[in-house]
Length: 352
Ligand code: NDP
Image (tube, rainbow, N blue to C red; front, side, top):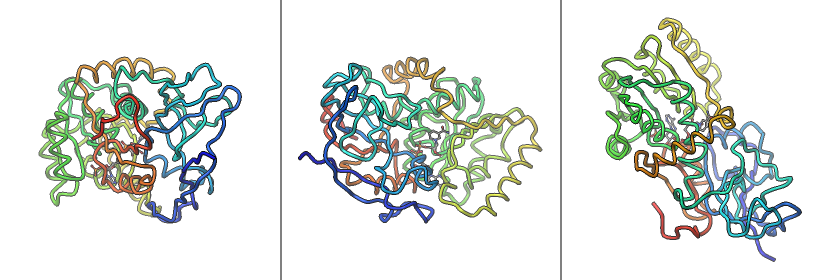
């Protein structure tokens, strides 16, 4: 019997951040594809902060195979959309093999699709050309509508979403300031990604450095982290500034509702005092139907012309998934967090 290695949720997490006890390694038989289904082998698994929210909220049940979007190879097919040998974007989760097609619950507003490996490395389907790129494009470009010369601040600027936001803002002629968690990441953000300035959020004088880097105030803030970074940004927001509220990763393990309440009061007061600050809540799923196609066309061209580059933080082997996941939530990733589960038939030696 062929074996399918997998990670299951061992318990509904009780602590703020993931621990080894939250995950259970398991094996089952490789499934046979039913009518209009295809059997696929996971090549790349995407690890994303939202997966933690699913686990903590109980949306992912104890005993379930952990959810995750994947790039997979079709091994056996009874579905004409997925021919054998094709590479597809789907949602196998944290396991070596999975089914795609009829009756497979995908929890995926990013619809399964066949990937064209000639356009870009296939891992980009879970990164710059996937949900993360679309998130950046939707929040910055569509919600905040950047104008040349405006100052844009991006938190978690070297991460999966942040690096795309930053580069799109540069392409639109903005002055761009990144915020990250290490000096090494700062060098990458101002070097390879071309930001005008970058500040290490862990520096003792972070707030002062941010103010100095934004002499004309902030016109757009792309929010990925919340907490202390958000508090440093707030007083610098200009009249008519815009915020895309994409994520609050510093708060995902914070159960202190009293402090969250205080923070909201302060935020509300500051936004009110500035007047006409537009705060856009961002949910990428709302942008898929209308904007995924134009996004893919524009972003693919930028990637092919080297106008947008991307950095992936690739861990080797499914065994590493829990450690890679915890590292990402702790800020120890450097780029989009991916687990390579099996060999990539389109580019076996490509690895960062
Ligand atoms: P990243 O690759 O950016 O990884 C997370 C980063 O968050 C870390 O590298 C770290 O960057 C930063 N971070 C972690 N902990 C803290 C902390 N306590 N304080 C400040 N920063 C911290 O992840 P993604 O690109 O996948 O996601 C970025 C954000 O976008 C997340 O908040 C996610 O939930 C959100 N998101 C929202 C979507 C939507 O539809 N609204 C869709 C997709 C993602 P550093 O150490 O460099 O600061």
